[in-house]
Length: 273
Ligand code: A2P
Image 1 (cartoon, helix red, strand yellow):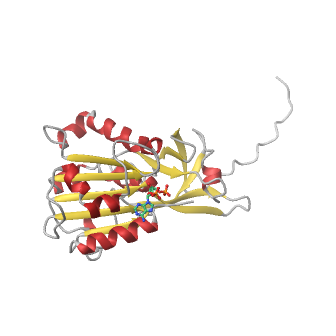
Image 2: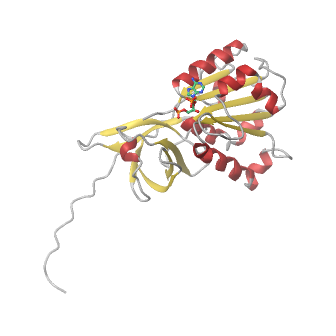
Image 3: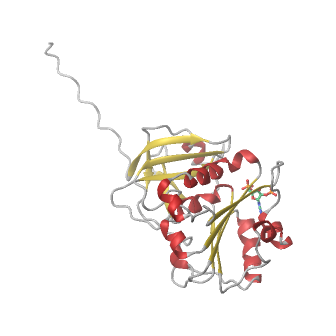
């Protein structure tokens, strides 16, 4: 033993609203997902988003809105993100590792929630790119299957590799004991419709074109079109997709809803950058 007094370590810099990264998965050069611990106080509705981020060099938080990809019953939180090499947040966030801390502000909000839609029979979830994140939450939420007879998830990406997160999500869901009970005898209550636009795959094309041509309905064995009596839709993608789909849905007579005024469809922009 020596009698030297040890210098007291400087107090560790703790982030406000810090949560610990428990898993990171890189899907492509452009996409990754990660899981973090969930704040004890955080209650949210499947489909909502929260602000998450990191501290900047000047000590101020840099936050962006991220859809929570995990369902409300999960004890951890999952996020699915793009990597933008010169994006202020994702250029740094893409390097997080297990054990790192990120900021998660425990104030969930958003319109892609069941409360913003009137009761219906068929629920369409239209997504492009990372816009699948809120639907990854909703298709793991038992209420989705209680409220609707059929749920159709469409996901459009540039190439096949970008569909992998969604493909695996569906595969895991169909092999999960608890989820299988919700999916019906033939596991067909949830229908998955992946398409690509820039690489050859079994189904190609923008979802807007597949809707307009009627191909989407034909592929699923439905009569062409949607009805405001039975169809409900949620849309999450780029601004272009959201604008074009709104026009198509309004053309079928569906009206945009909100938490304060539920209607037949809701839209939210997927986070970019
Ligand atoms: P496209 O390859 O024809 O642009 P991104 O990776 O740029 O976010 O795009 C994701 C997917 O969304 C791509 O397959 C892209 O098709 C598609 N997309 C982009 N804009 C629209 C739009 N206005 N309507 C329908 N799909 C779109």
